[in-house]
Length: 192
Image (cartoon, rainbow, N blue to C red; front, side, top):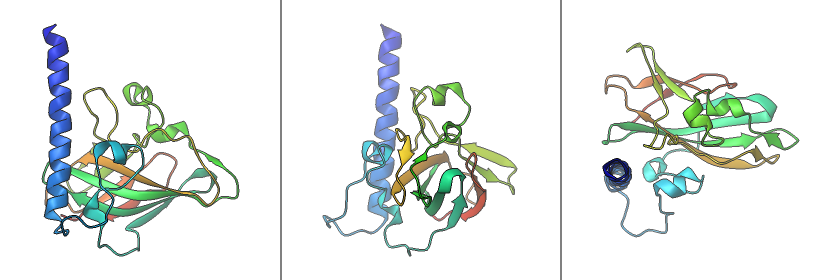
C-alpha cells in the first residue's frame, strides 16, 4: 500500500512541477493577460496540440532544419531554457514528400522503457561539446518521454507541431547540437 501511495505522490509532484514550470514560463514571457492565444498544458503539448508560449514573438525563420527519411523535415523553431531546470525545444515536423510518410520507429530511440510507450521523438539528444555531455529527452515517473507522442504517419504536405524537453545544460552552454535518429544533426542556440 505504501508503495502505491509513493508512486501516486511522485506522479502528482512531477505533474505539479511541470505545470508550475509552464505557468512560470508563460508569466515570464511578458504576455498580456487573457489574449486569444491557445492555452498550453502538458497534455495539450504531448498530443501535438498547442505549443508552449515561449515561442511567441519570435521570427518565422527556424533555428535549424534537419532532413530525415521519406521526405520528412524537422524545423526547430525555438529552444528555451526554463527556470525549472529544463530546455524545451519546439518545432514543426513536415512531410515534404509526395506520399504519406510512415514515422520510423527509430525516432523513439532504442530504450525499452520509451519504446513501450509508443511512437515518439524519445531518441533525440542535445550534445554540449563544450561541456562534453549528452542530454537525453526527459521522462515522467512512468517512463513516458516528455515529447510529442502517438503519431505514426504524416500525409504529404502536412505539418505537425512537436516539442521535446531535456535537462538544462549549464547556463554557460548556449550552443548545442540537436540529434534525432535518421536525421541530419544541427547546431541550435538556446535562449533564456
